[in-house]
Amino acid sequence: MSSDALRARFDRYDGDGNGSIDEAELSLLLDALGVGYSDVQVHATFTSLDDDSNGQIDFEEFCAWWTRL
Image 1 (cartoon, rainbow, N blue to C red):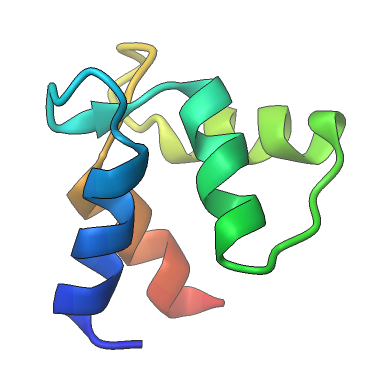
Image 2 (image 1 turned 90 degrees about the vertical axis):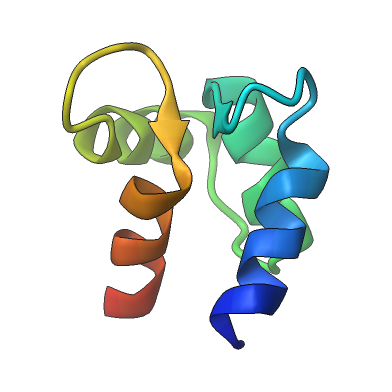
C-alpha cells in the first residue's frame, strides 16, 4: 500500500480530524486494513505506538509501524 493510500485510510478513521487517532479509531482502522486484532492486541499495539505517551497516534507513528509489518 502506498503512503498516500495509507494516509487516506488513516484520515478516514481520524474521526475528529485532529491529525491523530485514539485507541478506538486504531481498532477501526486495523479492521479496515484487514488486521484482525483482539481488544487486548489493539491496546498493546496502541501503547507501543504512542511514542510520546500523549494518548494519540499520529500518522508518522502509525506509518513507521505499518511499514515494519
